[in-house]
Length: 249
Ligand code: NAD
Image: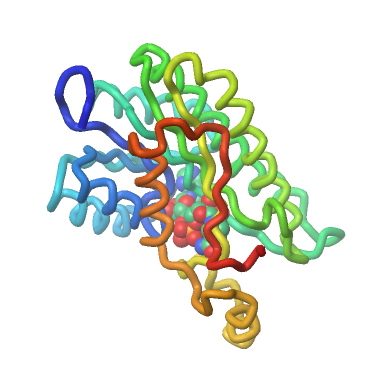
């Protein structure tokens, strides 16, 4: 897969224990990446993903909070110890705490910004130091169409995701000279536990707004991430690609 040592590439995926992150782990494993993934607290769910990934490749699951600098630094060190390199980082971990703006508890505001924006900053910072040494790397950030078309009650989430879109451009400009590409994925509705917060009554209304008339699957997102990680996207950097079945047209 093109590393200088001839070994398989290594992908680190945050929030890999379920939803889009779990699909990313399995999709990258299937095409031959060695996988490191991080999870927050659900050890059993992480073990299930680890088990599935190990059917294809080597896997390291690490418990860490992406918004905590010390935990992120320790996580990157253990990936480096185990695999020696990181070729692809996917900043996927995320949380939602929806509320109308005036009623958002301050701790919910801080937590949502911390997991998405600070988490993306911290993981990218420690991984890019390693990628600069390697003179190679791909960073993929997970935004949302909420960054461009926020729903009512998601101002914290939308602000964090809009920050990630612009952070992607800044990193692409700064890191390009080291052969590091940085891109962003902006999904619409994707069927995961994060989506369970929406009520089924709203689902039908939602479906009518999507030209392709279906909610996305985690595998739809994983296929785009594989493209952005691969050499087929070698001249794309700083870009945010919407993947929403046409919802935001
Ligand atoms: P999910 O809730 O199913 O999974 C989120 C993952 O993030 C979990 O593995 C969780 O453990 C992890 N996580 C949460 N806080 C963490 C922390 N502090 N440190 C480390 N890990 C943490 O969500 P999902 O739907 O799979 O979403 C994945 C990403 O895609 C998120 O960034 C989300 O904002 C984005 N996204 C999702 C949708 C959707 O419709 N599902 C749409 C647009 C964007």
